[in-house]
Length: 161
Image (cartoon, rainbow, N blue to C red):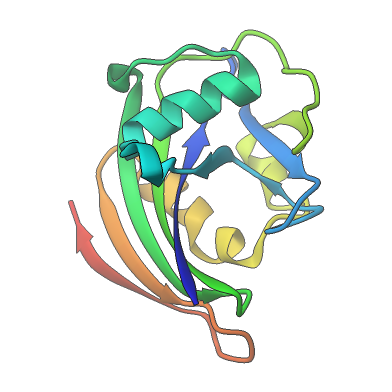
């Protein structure tokens, strides 16, 4: 399977609501998730550069590396049985002022954290990504997860501080 490297950026508005995109494309088509995308590896793009670029492309919000806090790295084996993913999760310190217009990848919504538990989100997000957001976004956590279809989702914390 291919190994893909991506970022997720957790952006909030002034009242603390989280910006999510309802994805029109795989992976996670039809589900709500934080914004993000794949690194431009042929250009040598860093995870911080990717997070700033994806945020600008998807929302228009301009970011510097200092506007981002890397709070987790997650390695997912066999996600949806099609590829392995290495994901860098960032908390965006800069707030968004308006809801962005829909893009080719999907439409946006702003949600209070307690609303996210009742909307359609990817299974791995429900299992551990939102728990990391709730409990560990001020620090750092590295996780590896076996996401192979037909197996019980198993996530192991490799480092945490």
